[in-house]
Amino acid sequence: MATPHRLLLTGFEPFGTRDTNPSQEVVSLLEKESFAGIELSTRILPVAYLPATEWIRTQMMHFDEVIMLGVAWARQEICVERVAINLMDAAQNDNNGFCPTDIPIRSDSPTAYFSNAPIKQMLAAIRDTRNPCKISNSAGTYVCNAVYYAALDEIANRHLPTKAVFIHLPSDECLSVSSMAEAIKAALNIRVRSTGDVGLSQVGKIVIRKS
Ligand code: PCA
Image (cartoon, rainbow, N blue to C red):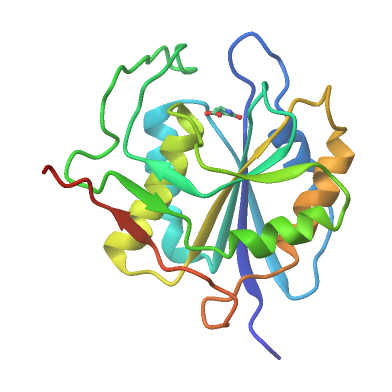
């Protein structure tokens, strides 16, 4: 029997003035389902820079693929994030009361990482579910970006085969949670294999050179 694809799916608890988070609701819908060939693990992360980034780093070595979800309330589409940047710059406190301004996530690490997952293929799978979606080139500078960055940094530092992607969900006023769950299910069913030929890119480093 083929070894199951070990997939970690994460969402976030509510934060700020909201008492729900669609990413948490999508994770709780999907964790009730079973997916052929996939060993699904789920986790709801605290909206707190330090515990969330520390925890995600400890997980990278245990999974073939990691799909992280969060909400971006102002967005109207499902956004497959291309890049994570080495910056914490919060417009509001995290749930631990931490509000960093212009602080690197890890001072000796690269400026940014590209996702090492086949984001265009994931986007196509989501588009096939007829939900609004796009590639986004900024995951922001709040906790979602920090978790994404920590995941890719850990993969790069340890030379892990794990594939990681972050997907921002829109407000549930734009799209129902069940539609979002259908879309994420489609992305998850791609089952990105580290040994397969679907990966379009390796973990990339962007180096800003001073001229
Ligand atoms: N969205 C926030 C953090 C948690 C979440 O769901 C963000 O975009 O950073």
